[in-house]
Length: 72
Image (cartoon, rainbow, N blue to C red; front, side):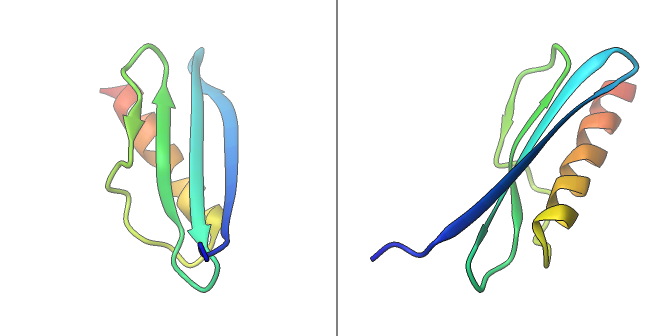
């Protein structure tokens, strides 16, 4: 039987660029970022944003990555 996986996402904008971040967390495991979309840049599936204790922390890590990509 597959383990249950929770997921959450956020959508926002940064200097007029749309951002979408998706995170997942297996029950009893660490949360991770599964997708980052930042403006017109190519989608990043499974970016290396580290492992986190909560989905919220993972989403924030993905958001930090997205804003850094837009800034550069």
